[in-house]
Length: 111
Image 1 (cartoon, rainbow, N blue to C red):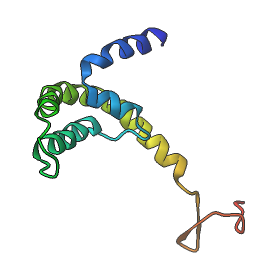
Image 2: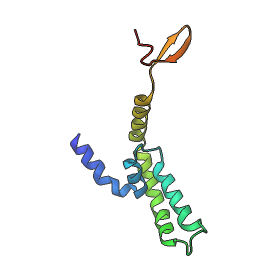
Image 3: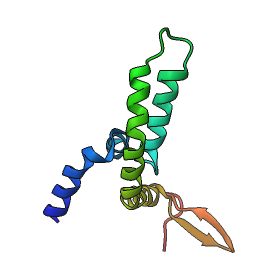
Image 4: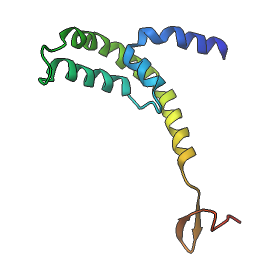
């Protein structure tokens, strides 16, 4: 397990900056690195509220996008597992009474 974690940590920089930022975000989202690259590119190159546009940052986003796409695809099973775990942890248990589900709470203990 330790070897796998070390290999993953060493391969992460080659996967793209967007993937790295996505994996450390809480919670990571599927293809969140690609979405981050796209939003940064839009802000850097297309936002007219600032002068001059940040063409250097826009070029870096374009160069990073294919690596981030590959990294996001490779990390998709991990992101899906983390998302599922978070959703299951946040899900409120329900009790079925008379065909209708209602949330369990302090006032209705499970039997």
